[in-house]
Amino acid sequence: MGKVAVGVNLEFVRHADKPFEWGVRKAAELGYQYVEPMVHWGRELLSEAGYFHSVSMLDDPLRVRRAAEKAGVKLSGLSAHTPLTKPEIGTEYLKQAVRFAAECGAPVVNTDEGPKQPWTTEEEDWLLMRYVLHEAAAVAEPRGILIGLEPHQQYSRRPAGLDRMCRLVRSPAIGVNFDTGNSYLAGEDPYRWLARVLPRLVHLHAKDISIQQSKSERGKVTGTPVGCACGDGVIDWQRVVALCRRARRDIVLSVECGTIEQAARSIDHLRPLAARRGR
Image (cartoon, rainbow, N blue to C red; front, side):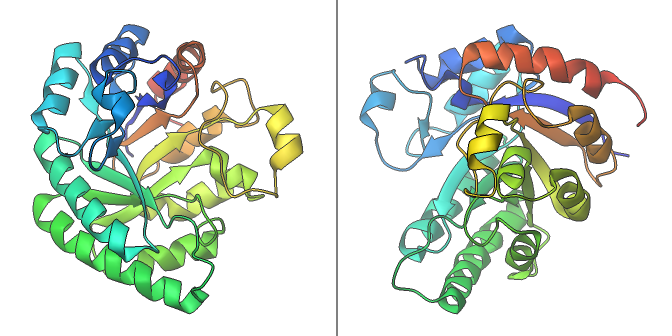
């Protein structure tokens, strides 16, 4: 049985107008064991000015490692979402994210297929995704980095589609970053789907969905950037934790919420559940 720990995606400080290091320290102050930084390519004005938490992959990866070590937290992975259906972007972006992760100490790089182009056929999209994932897996395997494919867009919104994405390339580097909120909003049973992907599970986005959002969007969207505080919405977290303990590897529940206050409530709800022994 795998161990379950609680972390947080740094999206929780997106509205705080603070830099990456501040977000890491805040996560530690709230009691999180792990953080999931977001990375980007090139240079971004707000990040460079210290008003946003995302880190450029042109920066020294040791910046990320040192910030985590100084705050006393670990890295659960990198949020490196890039459109797999756009090889002119996704290929080099994902390869660079893998190399960045290897040097900063993040074991998983999370991504999804991205929005569909209006002029490509579905079969063309599958070929494009296979190309990107093959190139990325070739970089990830020798470095021991895992690629977490997330249910978030048009193909991965259904269990069969996510399964097909995972089978595009036969590589031990390719796994699943399951998202509880996205799967629920897509109209699926998140617990049944999570049980289905347990053999491939490498990371989990702990995203809760409010009753209001559930009523207005369930079955109409494929996902959402962030959710409400864990424990305030529709997701049964005791059930999620029990399922994650059956995974083949240790799993971090990386909370995806939109405010510091929600992050505080989330860890208060999740930490006792993760600390319990057994099922």
